[in-house]
Amino acid sequence: QVQLVESGGGLVQPGGSLRLSCAASGFTLDTYAIGWFRLAPGKEREGISCISSSHDTYYVDSVKGRFTISRDNAKNTVYLQMNSLKPEDTAVYYCATSPLSLCRAWRAGADFGSWGQGTQVTVSS
Image (cartoon, rainbow, N blue to C red; front, side):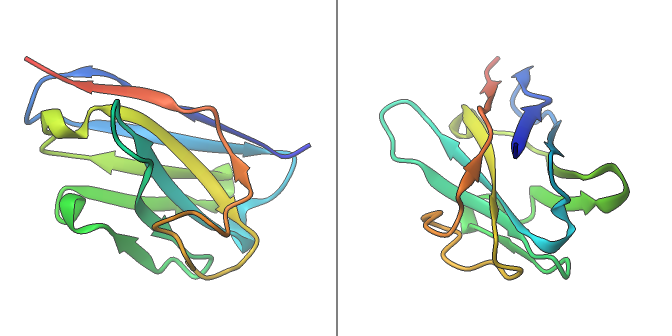
């Protein structure tokens, strides 16, 4: 069974940092594109970042320069380093896999079939 588990969320002050992890079990991540998505109250789910199997990275404008996506194939884990956090970043964050090696339709997540259960990130003073 394919399983993704997100971790690393929590409560942080504005300007602070968190590192989210997306750990895979039951399969090897290295051939997949991995996306990070978030869902905030009253908003639609949005794709915020994606990393391809060849380690190409993509970011939505609102997180560029603040968030960094990376992957550690030895640990079968993908990370999202979040710096300079803002209250607007408050959301449940999800990771998901695409069977495609490239990031395609990552903003909407149409090609992403396996999803984790999410981890809560709250940015508040």
